[in-house]
Image (cartoon, rainbow, N blue to C red; front, side, top):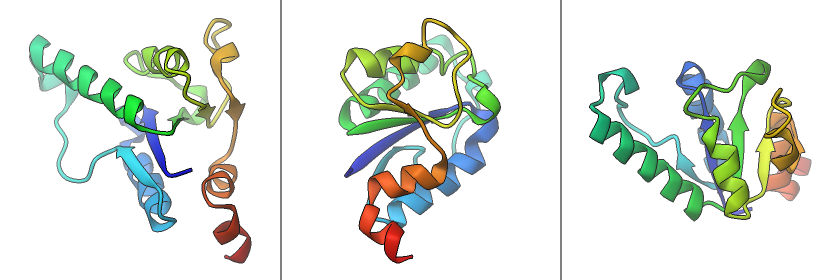
Length: 129
């Protein structure tokens, strides 16, 4: 796997950045989260929020696969649309924990741990290290 878009609630932002860094160390391009400062969604205007959502959907389009960082099965309200969008774009959809929504869970390719994701993205390096 060459590229991944991580999706998840901003409450897990720092953990998603750590995952991005680990994936990049294995040569995987991460569409999101992006390096640098981020803006709190609550401070955005309606137009800015819409633009941010559209930019994120483009990142999903560009990624080879989607990984939803839903620790404890938590999906934030803005994250809920991303599994459906990824599925409609025919992207493999991996989640950290089961999604407790009977309409979303069938869209998931696999529930996997971060260790399993690391094995999937770069199996040789995972076996060596």
